[in-house]
Length: 166
Image (tube, rainbow, N blue to C red; front, top):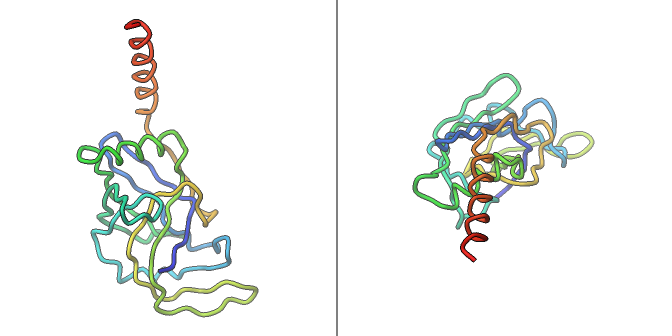
């Protein structure tokens, strides 16, 4: 299975809602590959939302996607009410430690590009992962809501409580 890492524009809400740009059609990724918009037409939802392409680390589900000018946008939900790991990943997104999306797929049809890389014309999308180091420079995090500050405050209160208990 091919995997392309993309620095993605996405936003993670306090309720686990997340959306982002999974692929930028206007520029090649770091290895010179480009994907045509029509290549995603067969994508079937829901799709697994993994952390770091680890099939043993699902953190949510992607429910829908759309092609917008210049990119392939995803909408989904981190399963923060059911999975502790999803809450951890949301905190990493909000803190800016996790900025990328990466698509896991099988190439069905591609042609070589002059100067290197491929133009992928057809693919079978299997999953989209949240990642720390994305491949595509054309997509990046736009914002993450402020729950991280609350988590920092809780951690400080817990440390202070531990000190007082001594």
